[in-house]
Amino acid sequence: MSCQSAGSSTATRAVLFAARKAHGRPARTGRPCTLADKAKVAIFISGRGSNMAALLYASQLPEAAYEVVLVAANDPSADGLQLAAAEGVHTFALSHQGMPRADHEAAMEKAARQAGADYIILAGYMRILTDRFVKRWQERMLNIHPSLLPKYPGLDTHQRAIDAGDSHGGVSVHLVTPDLDAGEVLGQMKVAIREGETAESLAERVRYAEHQLYPRILGDYVSRESDPSFLLERVRKLALALPQTHERESHGAPGWRAGSEKSGKYFAYFNDQHHGSDHVALLVKTSGMDELLNLVEAQPHAYFKPAYYGASGWIGLILNRPNLDWEHVGEWLERSWRSIAPKSVTRLMNVAEEF
Ligand code: GRF
Image (cartoon, rainbow, N blue to C red; front, side, top):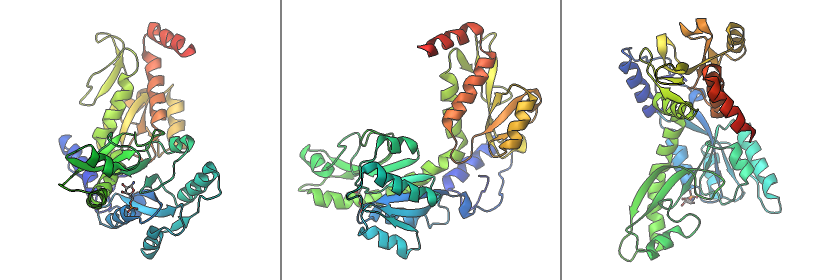
């Protein structure tokens, strides 16, 4: 996670550089990024695969933040499979015909996992996915849709935009959720609708826009997990969602307290590469030194003993690492909050949880 050169995305490097400068530390050059540092993506297609091709070639740029570890299709004759294979990318094809939906997607998923994918990228994949599958890949599955969502989810998007007299059609990249084309929109590009436009002519130009947008948005998205400001925003949201909490800076770092402004106590701090450490971390309270040392020893990729705070039982939960489980971060925050929050408030919370 701490590589700083060609392999990590420009955006990520810029953020880390800015973050270090802001803290008065020189930017590190560090070891060069290797393929192992890049996010691994599996792309699912059903046909031509022009978006897949755009993603694949963009991944070959030196600063790309992701690599394509698999191209998989539900149609063995999908053109995109040949293109991917010719570029040396591992492919997988399995017709969905005659197979229960869940079995087919389980086979696609297995291929993605075996290829080591951290993300599934849908690019013209014409299968509806089960809710269970979507939930398993929540926040790790992106799709591209040829309209300016929330306008025109579903099919026939171009004709619907023309019929409505819209000045623009366009394209959206969004997170996949169980509701069709309804997940958070990560990026959009508008495409002008001209006089006499047909659905075909508009689709052709929208595709140019798609090929620009998808690689950029995917690159930025997979880089977020090492972006300190993104991580801080997420932690802040979780911390402030707990009852009777407020934020207060402590020695230049954001911290969160439970109780009143006057007599509240800290239950969490955010550390951005403090004291020469590579970590962007959340500091929370353990039950004591035994637990802290055991966790650090058993899971050094996830925990560390922070300078100064470690001595009084605060543990560093490393946030800038792949596949971070945000539910787990939320659980740590709640636990730490419970250990210092006024009993009157935790009692109320216990009662609420029973219902
Ligand atoms: C694209 O228009 C995309 O927006 C939609 O399906 C189409 C796939 O085209 N989801 P291609 O196979 O990438 O050329």
